[in-house]
Length: 321
Image 1 (cartoon, rainbow, N blue to C red):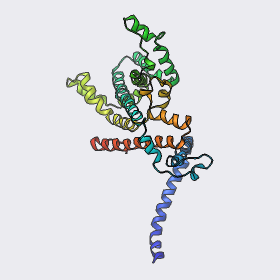
Image 2 (cartoon, one colour):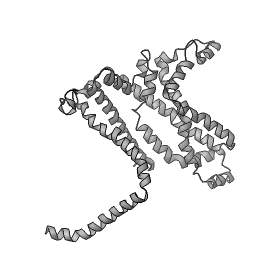
Image 3 (tube, rainbow, N blue to C red):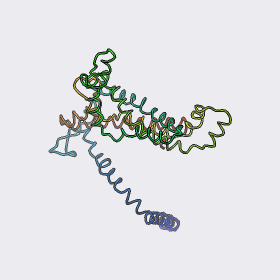
Image 4 (tube, one colour):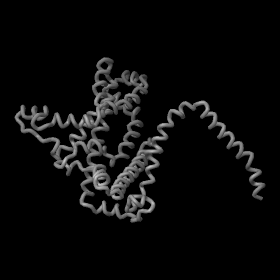
């Protein structure tokens, strides 16, 4: 009975398998240069993103170096409970979320506004000058940006405090004040990234049908009305996709910049999950505990990404998948 079934199914299955394998072979033969070009990227993600997932299990163990990962004792959710009950949990969570949402509230809409404004500029020389000025900060390293903040905001020699004193004010210790940390972090991030982030919106705006603008102009629509009713709806799918990606990484505040700006005086406002993982994991060698904290951070990001993508798909049928 089994042999008769397999005999009946074999010709069709063989045809499908052969046709599929033949298509794959032909595609690889025709585009082998492209596959070779993408190979380093695939290897990078496998080596540095997927293989390290093997070590996630230490978050559920008391990792002992001489015993290795497999032989270290299993402790379940012990490290997660310790983190949730710790003194720092509320501060770390609130700082991480507030900095991320603050950054999103400014860094996300400003590139859109900049792209819409640049798209309306007709003087090409002026447009190129503005683009060059706004793109340039993207190529500065985080170390340089933070160094500039320390120089410009120095309470005794910084140009900003000189201006404040000139107008009759008192010097402000910006870099050591917890009240100023989030604002400085976000505004410097906006300055560094707004030009580069606007490129994708400018690319989307290049696909706007100019006949729509001509028809709207004939109907008496103003420039603002044309931007609102033609340009914005055209780039709306791009905006939604990027918003999903940004909301899906709410818990992933950049470690490098926060760490460089952080000091003992502004710790109450600057301490976030990634810097806490660095202190406990690298400095204090609490590998299992820091792995548990980092895993919690990643799981929250993943859950937010799924949730935001689901909401976006239900609301306007634009989503990542």
